Length: 422
Image (cartoon, rainbow, N blue to C red; front, side, top):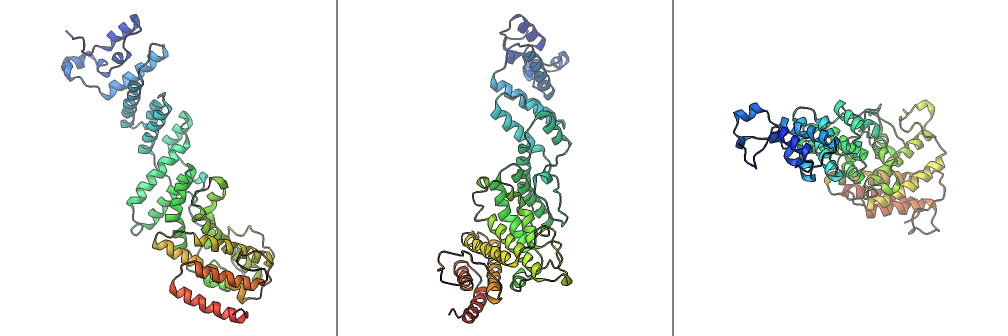
C-alpha cells in the first residue's frame, strides 16, 4: 500500500480534483503520477523517474485543466513545466514547437529570456545578398532571410524578428572569433559582414559600429583597387582601374545603412569612427565628378555605377564642396582613435590623400568660390593662402610616417615659395 507521501496515479488525483477543487494541482501534474500500470509493475515506487514523455503529458493535461478553470500552478512549477516540455520538443527536432510551449509563460521577462535562449541554440546563418559589383549588402532586406522553421515561428507565434537578428549576430561573432583571416579570408570577411548586418537589423547600432571599425572599413581600405588614389587625386584624375568598383563606391555601399539612421540614434562613437570614412568617400566621389568635368567624352572614363546617378555640376561648386569636406575630414582625423596598426595605416593613407587633394588647389589655377575654412585663418588671406594654411594644419595635427612628412614638407615649401607666402 502506498504511503501518504508516495506518488499516486493521475486518475486518483483527477478524481480528487473533481470532488475537491482545492486539491493540489502540483501533485496532479507530477510526471511521476503519469505512468502506466505496466511501468509501475516493473519499477519500485522509489525508482520512478520523470521521463520526457511524462512532462509532455503533464503539460497537455495542464492546458486542459486550465481551460476548464480548475486551479493554477505556482509560478515556479509553471516555468519548470514549460521548460521541461520545451526541452522534450527540442530534443525531438521540433524546436519551433518548443517556442510555442515557452510562449505560454505568463511572466514576460522569463518568457523572453527562455525564448531567446532557445532561438540562440537553433538559428542558422544565411548568406547575404550581393550588389552587382560583388559587394555584400548590409541592408535589412538582404539580412532578413529565414529558413522554414524560423519563418514559421515569426509567422505563427509573433516572435519579434529582432530576437532572431540578435541571436544570429551573436552566432556570427562566435564563429568569427574561431576563424582566422589569414587561413580563410573570405569566410572571415563574410562572418564580419553578417555580424554587422544583424546588429544593424536589431538596432544595436553601437555593436554594429564596433564591427565596422574593427573589420569592415579597414578591410575595404586595405584591400581596395591597386590604383593609387593619392597619386591620381594629385592630378585631378580618378579611374576605376582593375577593380569592378572604386574605393568611393565600396565605402558608400558599406556605409549606406548609417545614412538611414536618424542623427540622434547614431552610435556614440560615430563621429570619431565611421563618419571619417563617410566624409572620405564623399571626397573621393567629388574628385570623381571633378575628373568627369575635366575629361572629354573621347577619353571615355568608365563611370562608376554608384556615382553615375550624381549630376555633374559646375567645377566651382565641386571645388567648394571638396574644400568644405576636406576641412571637415581634417577635424575628424584629429580625434580618430588608432588602437591597432591597421588603424594607423588607414589613418595615414586617408591623411596623405587629403594632403595631396589640397595640394591640387595650390598647384593648379582653378576657379574657387570664397568659403570659410577655419577660425585661425584671417579674413585678409586669399583663398590659395588659406588652403596652404589648411595643409599646414593637417601636417602638424595628424601623425604621419616620417617619409610622408618629409615629402609633403618639401612640396609644401616649394608651393609656399611659389605663392610668395614664405
